[in-house]
Amino acid sequence: MDKKIVIPGDFLSDDVKNATDGTYVEDGKVFAAVYGLASLKNQIRVVPLSGKYIPKRGDMVIATVSEVTFSNWITDIRSPYDGLLHISEFPKRIENDDMAKHINVGESVMALIKDVDPIMKVELTLNDRRLRRIDEGRIIQVAPSKVPRLIGRNGSMITLLKNNTNCNVFVGQNGRIWITGKERDMDFAEKIIFKIENESHVSGLTERINRFIKEEKGESAREPEYEQEPEIEEEDIETDKTVEKTEDIPVEEETQEEDAPEGILDELLGDGK
Image (cartoon, rainbow, N blue to C red):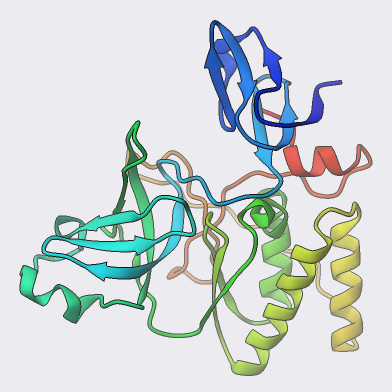
């Protein structure tokens, strides 16, 4: 069996060169760093089942400003670690005295994690055409560990959501979700999102969400239409992990398993490629 539930400290493998997310290496052996589902096929990784968001380079997140200092916006990214947005990472040149005029305490931004150093100093950037301050719509939160199920394989679940709500939906890897659209449509999108979160541990999720949408709308739910994700030009962005309905909101490229007969472990962990 190449997938199993593990707790921190569980031995996973002697193959240290394939150790990835959710693991650590000690004395030439790979151990689980978090409580979650371990995949031992190809790459060795552990998908957390609970807990705070652990940032990594290339993640797209929704960050909320908690403090404005002389040269940094200090932000909450739903992590044990603050996200630091330096004034030089703002998309245009501004003066230090004007920082609060552009992004103030309590305001949120779509940001990219530019770097995470060994002591977990998390650096953010807005120097990308996809990134911006959030000035409309609403932001809701789900458990960060439920993000893969909300997105679905090749963005299938989130595509199903936006096709049936007429909303733009951006899913941050830290579990914050930005929704824009008409109030009634946003209410419906929010209702679907929380149902996905609450039932993500049960297999057959896509079928149940389709049925739920059909019952709520009183009509046949549309099947998701798969889109071709755009290529990312920036060398330091490993994977574009966001979703779009229009060109203004990014497309999710995170590949996760959809419902499959192999069971919930396969759905959450994917094929490990």
